[in-house]
Length: 190
Image (tube, rainbow, N blue to C red; front, side):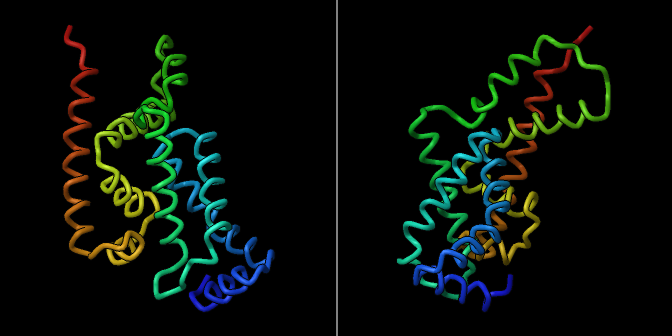
């Protein structure tokens, strides 16, 4: 959606137009869900937190001032706060979100199938992501999962391009160290 259309929809929604509110929801819900899912690694929790984000959007849209930054930047900030609030309230870290699924699979010796290898690699990456700071996780998700360039990522996070570069550099190095550490734990010496 272009910025002029979005601006008109925001103004209409602020004036009580439910169709405009629905259009804003439809235009952004998938991106917010993916962003949250990549932070929490749990589909049900991601759906719940996505609902929280849009509840807050509806509640606070009247105070939103449309500037040169798209609405999605504001929604990403709300999503980040929702994720942080959830984990503060539940007093657990991101890796605990999948514990039940991990316990079930631990006793099974999977065949070396491409899908299982990909799932295993995704698990390593999710585990490694928990070692990053919240800001580093945001940058990794926006840059490599959502596919935004440096300028757009900086705009969405309200940071400078140089700050995003530094966060990305640190995140990539931290991920590398975390992945090496996780791989060492799985090495079996005969």
